[in-house]
Length: 199
Image (cartoon, rainbow, N blue to C red; front, side, top):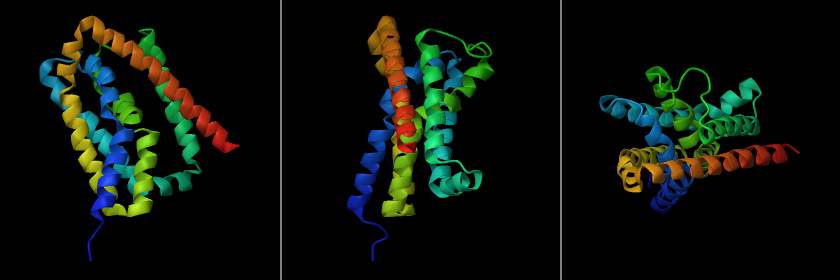
């Protein structure tokens, strides 16, 4: 008897990749990484990827139980994530620095976790997808799907620098502002859907 169905595995990997969508993280990752010295950028990317892996694995394995213990619903989590994304999108659109100066190295490195790793990469959509895969196809397929997609995300973000170079400085700025606007709309849609599902 096979441990899992190959077709289910392929479908799960594709499903998670579509939701994870590392391409949309590039315009946010590259400008932030460029504020660091070149020798620190690989560590920054590794931190981002490891944080995203941790989030997806944590929610796949114990997320549901933690929510129940704390009395937090998944909609509560989605609203919180939506608010974080909205604040980040607005600050990026208007070049507003929130908290300590953004160009301080310690603050740049924190952005590898919030908002890049979560909720941009490992957000409500990808978390709900891995939970769905876990319940539908089991732990092995869910875990394999996470690791395959996180490797793809690493490769895409690593090569994102070349994509942004092709766009040029003004093109990269335009993409950054455009994606910030899209992100704001996405954040509002998460909050709206979560509030509607409560009623």
